[in-house]
Structures are given as C-alpha cells and as structure tokens.
Length: 388
Image (cartoon, rainbow, N blue to C red; front, side):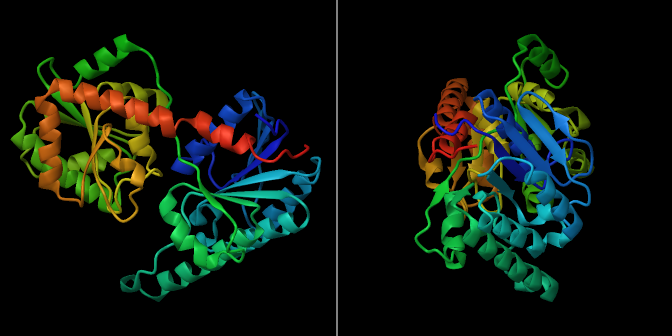
C-alpha cells in the first residue's frame, strides 16, 4: 500500500467518551497504526496528549469553540506539510447544539491553506421534520449549510452508506466530485475465550434453552420496536431467553418485565460493558434480532458486530437499506418493520439448528468480504501518494 506518512484524524468523539463514532475512530486509528502509519487523533475533550502504539491522541481544550479551533490550528501547524486530515463527521459531535458552522469553516480554511481534506460522512444532517417545530427546522437548515461548506472543502468524500449520496449531491458545489462508499466495520473485536463464553451463557440459560439477543442503544424508536418484539416473542416461545446488550438495555428490560408476561428469569440486560464482554455475550447468542426504523444499513455497527461474530441476524429493510443486504445468507430481513413478521423469522431460526449454522457462516463471510477494517485501511492508504 502507498501513503506511509502521518494521518490526522479529526473527531468529535473518542474514548473514553461513548459513541459509535468514538469506537469507530479508535479501531481505525489502531488498524492504521498496525499498517505502519503514524496516526494523530485530534479530539475536543480537554485533557493531556496520549502517545501509544504509533497513535498519538491530542485533546484540545475548549472543545470546538473559536478558542479551541485556534489552539488546534497552532498544534497542527507544527507538523510537516502537506497534512492529511480525515474528518469523522456527525453534525452533533462538534457542539453548538449541532450547529457548529464555525468548525466547518475552519475545515475549509485548512483546505485553502494546503491541507488535504478527506471527509467521512457518518451522518449528514437532520431531516426536515415539520411536526417538531421551527427550532428543528432551523437546525436542519444550518446543518445543510455545514455540509455544503465541508463538501466544497473536501478533496475526497467517503460515505458510511450509499444512501447518503443522493441526499448530498444537491449540496456539493463540485457536482463531479466522486463520493465513495466506505463500509463501516464492527467496533467489537472478537474475544476468544470459549470457556468463559460457556460460563456466561450458563448464567442466563439452561442447556435446553436458546438465547435471542439484541445489541445496540435502545432509545427512541429502536427501543420501542425492540420492546414490542421481546414482549411478544418471549411469552410465545417459552424455550427462549432474551438478552439485551448496550446503553438503555436495563430500562428497556424493565419496561418489558413490567407488563407481567415475561418472568425476570428469561430477560437479561447488560449495559456499560466493555467491548470484550460484548463479544463474549454475543458469542453466547443463538440468533440476533435488530430492528431499525429506517431499515438495516451498513452504518449500523450493532448489526456489523453480529455479522463479525458469525451470528444469524433478523432485521428489516427501510428507506436507507443498502443493496448489499439483498445478498443471500447472513441476514434475514423483512420488507418493512412488523413485529409479528420478525418474530416468525426468529422462530424459524430457533426451530432449525442447521439453518442457524448456515446463516452464521454466511454472516461471517459477508463481513469478511465487505466490512472488515482491513478494507477501510486499504482504501485510505491506496490513494494518490502524499509526501508527509
């Protein structure tokens, strides 16, 4: 691969701060470092600079305010030109209530000054939701101005899902500028410890029971959908145990249990867990159910974690679903969300071990072929050579 010089990853989230972009950036930085690249991560949480295995984490005081951006400029200018800046973009990650246009103008100024700007769009902007009132309309409008500014500044634009491209094209001043899908990888490395997996599973289920899991953050519509599925599935399938992993899982489990149809011995929740424990818990599942209001897509790291662990996944399509999910095996998706239809698919997996094993093998193959972090590193480092 080419481009062996230093990279500067600019991110609004980074561990120990929680968040999908936080975990994504940490995994990417480590993978790039292992590929022989010097990596600098610049993040807004105040603190001391941390130097690790070819990854140096710079924590800029004052976050992404004018003062913080001035400090970031001074620090970056100490490094040789031309500098490669990889922006991990989610509008709400830069403070100012998701309307930090000044940060976007700062990125544009860096580009004019000679830095190479690569933009990774995890999420572009809020939709216009007129039912939510003028404040949200204004926020959505400002976030489109932010995106227009960034697209004009970027030398290359990466997208977490192909579905963002038609939304972004109207805001791209250079209409011919390519936008490339850069599939998101799993943030949960596989933790190999079969004895511990067996022990953890035995704490939840007997040898005759099957474990239906769900992983993610369970707020909003996803939480409502997940609660409906487990609230209906577990009373019907008495041989099953439910397992919820991730932020908001305990509140969701309490909500399902409060209805009285599910005993506390058949629904468990674990949140604020390490990536290692998430991996061990996932390995103890027989099937995963992952509903999404906008459909399964390649930005859903919760689904990618299940794929990378070789688990059959039941989910639903939606307006942001990528064509890749139409490939056979690995993921079983209904056209639109309906709890009863998802439960019927889960039940089919529970009834047939051979089907579960076959889908699990296909899930791992799908992940390795399209989503593994090595593909992302190869794409980033395989571009035009830039002297560092």
